[in-house]
Image (cartoon, rainbow, N blue to C red; front, side):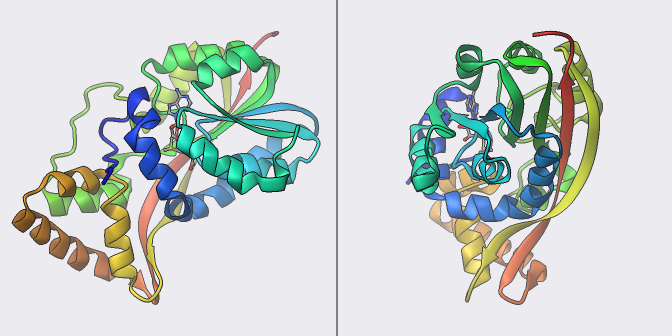
Length: 287
Ligand SMILES: C[S@@+](CC[C@H](N)C(=O)[O-])C[C@H]1O[C@@H](n2cnc3c(N)ncnc32)[C@H](O)[C@@H]1O
């Protein structure tokens, strides 16, 4: 079984087992981010041009590309992701919508941006926090943007505001990493001031940033606790710890997770509190 641990999320992992798990779990990851997507898709649509070419960075199973294509039928959309498995899912979801106007391309976002630009819009749902060097990456995306093009992306805010991480930390006994500077991963873009400085340094003019608190749905259905437990065993900080635990310890963790999840149950649903930033920026200068 492949386990995604949110811990090592370098390029090779997304190309390999992490991408495979995300591809297998795309319905539940989409569900977990659906409440955020309402806000992100609206932010993207608020600046998306009617025509031109847009890039969805680290598009995964394609939710943001599909929403953008539906909102702007005259805008060409390219979704790019490192994972071939995720690209196959995105392609299948697009079905007949996948035409000249909507393409999914497997590869590194920076290489594809350089080859296929200039873009009139760049967007991403949680796909920009994994570059080894954020300033270099943002600068290279700026190079691939027309002057005045917009960049809109979401990223998790601080770990402490995201129940899927704090809950797992408490139950599993993980000590959250101390502030060690930039570490590519889910919380790599959590520091608002730092990200604002990176954007400016790399040729983007930030024009809006909002914090969005949203419901991160981890379980649903007849037995939402078991659904949540199975989801958290695949995706998120609990996954790796559970996978590595000896059988007795794993049972202890699972029992503790079930008990900790229960108070978050409302009817047939379990939603954890989550918090993200939605950034908007404009490409400085010509190009
Ligand atoms: C947290 S997932 C988000 C996926 C998708 N945007 C969504 O919201 O479901 C991050 C995605 O970024 C992709 N990714 C990470 N680094 C990348 C890179 N350098 N180029 C292209 N994709 C990348 C991963 O393969 C992964 O699918």
